[in-house]
Length: 573
Image 1 (cartoon, rainbow, N blue to C red):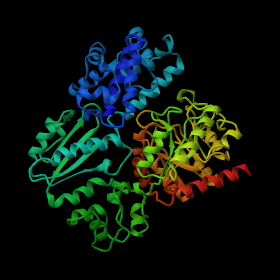
Image 2: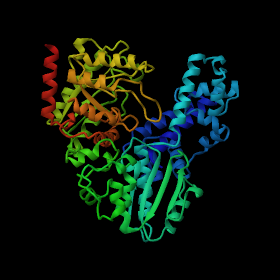
Image 3: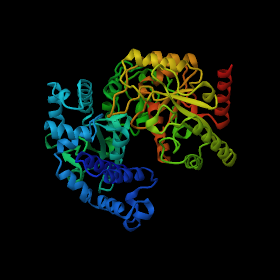
Image 4: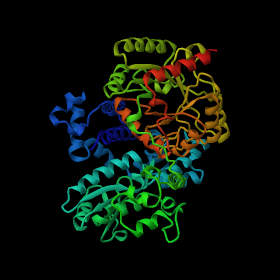
């Protein structure tokens, strides 16, 4: 059980306590445990049980619950709460925009015990008549239920990749297995995964079936399986799992065929001659290859990395040998858009800086929330000045590593940026983001963004659509208008690398590049572990053919400093 699962269990306990109107002190205690676990930088499961209080900083009572959870998958109080709560009511707690108090009202006052019953009641107009709800809440609940339905049976790439990696590691231990690889949506690094596909090379599928049938958390779909294919689902998420067994000498071809989507495999080959295969799929059927690179070369194409195999023009570019060298993790020199304990981060400014420096990066852009973000402990003017004084002190101490003075300035309802002009002038750079009044139509959202982009203090546009994958749809925007405006005003667009966001969507990266807009891989880190999310942003950028040259935070510290200084000079003029 990883740290995230532990945090989820303690948060659920707090929700269930509130649902049952338990003591507020107990609720805060469980929320506090979840928060404490979020701040840890090591896997709690690897700690010896007697040492949990000292290593985690938790009380002996809460540490004992962590130990019980690690050893049994639950703990006494959580299980007691689950036992007296209908499973459907627990499901209601997962619906965006509805907290334990409202779930309690639906359950106790209206007898609603499942999302299905909630939908029926809302569609009949009954929810709007309940005390504390109303027509707008009813409409929001219906929208949230629809989004929940669309998200069912899906996982974030980061979650699916981890499951695939864990399963592949177990399969590699089996006798006779020569090769194992994740394929399909996971290998293409799609931001949302519906099926975790794994390819195994082995002469005997029996041990593979036996392992999968016995694996905890997997459900076998017998009707969809066969001698050389095991299919099923992950029990807690419903995401599909498909494991195929092939001969070792056919592994490369099958890996290729199972990686690209249909549009990539079936695309007409521009240089196909008479009697030659007309598509990549036909080449894979015609002969066996020792490597995927050899297959593309035989087809007259430049090698196409798995992330690009989406059938979006990459075949034509590969035929012309025009796929550029794509961005790599090692190209990044710094990390911009990060938070500290000054706002809603879990680690101090010093901790965020020294950790990043020790990882080999040259600079940190600190962008705590601005004052309008009350919910996130946004910084008022005096706290901004306090932070900037600390940055000056740390820069003197940590040189040549540098902390840039940034802020994540809220884009207000009228499109203006938080703070007055004088205070905005004190920052090295400003990330402008929308965090409030998210329910907008395309015209309103686009106009709000365009106004912010036109502000001379806007250095970078943060998470352009505000989406939270599988949790909340982003507000609709006119992507071309927004990207064109960024090109006009020389505003950088972030690819927010948090796996819940990955916003700007990779499908618009190529358009941004074509318009000359620089992008920045920003982790939006709220703790030191969050820096690792930059990897997901790099993968998203690669899917859009992002290069080192078009990525802002591949600049050296001196180059970044010069850019920020020149932009500030233009702003003041």
